[in-house]
Image 1 (cartoon, rainbow, N blue to C red):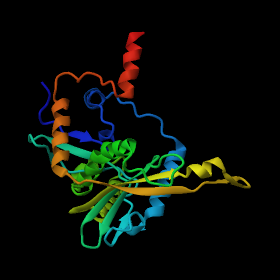
Image 2 (spheres, rainbow, N blue to C red; image 1 turned 45 degrees about the horizontal axis):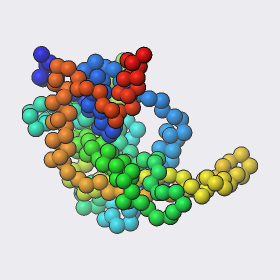
Image 3 (cartoon, helix red, strand yellow; image 1 turned 120 degrees about the vertical axis):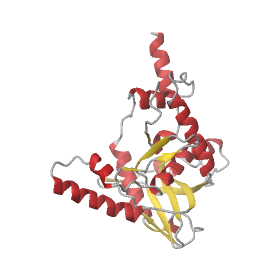
Image 4 (cartoon, helix red, strand yellow; image 1 turned 60 degrees about the vertical axis):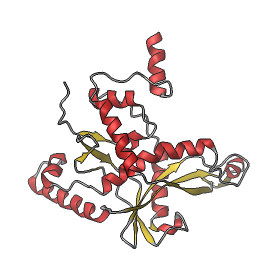
Length: 268
């Protein structure tokens, strides 16, 4: 029997394109495929974050007044949260951006370097099934970031256990700095969840402008709102934990690339 008091750490990014078989194998058996992080992706992420800092209307002109802040490139933990069946879990991760609206509410924003327009058109294809699919798949990720930043763990003893420093004074200084950041990025009532899709213009790619040793490419972006539904999110988390407490993993999924790879491997 599994320990019913176990606290599962759930990563927001792991909730997008979720395969419950792979999630089970990661949580229960520690088997996780993390993929390969490309340096160019990390560089673009940093550029995007810096570009949108400040006035939130740079993201969406229809927003109320507010400021986009960077929640630091730091992994934070939430306090222990409770699902619909009374089981504990934490959210663990680091998001792209938080909006602090002037009325005290907040927004949760995530940047995606991903195609959002069809080829040979200047129209934004929000009715395109592939874009809608992306928005729906990233929906739980944004909800998880909200649950994280609205319930940040600030218990000193917990933070001390996470420290890798050796000296007592260094540990204390690190905890004080983290508590300062927690106070700065903590949020309350949500007003807006959204994705900002960023992608190079296709026409620019056809006629790259080369200036000495530089290649100049224009990137366009578009904001896509995500419906806030915290009740549905908690229902989904409860289903997620139902699976984690099973004695065996669910079967592999035909839509999961890792599962399909393992199926082919087993056939050999």
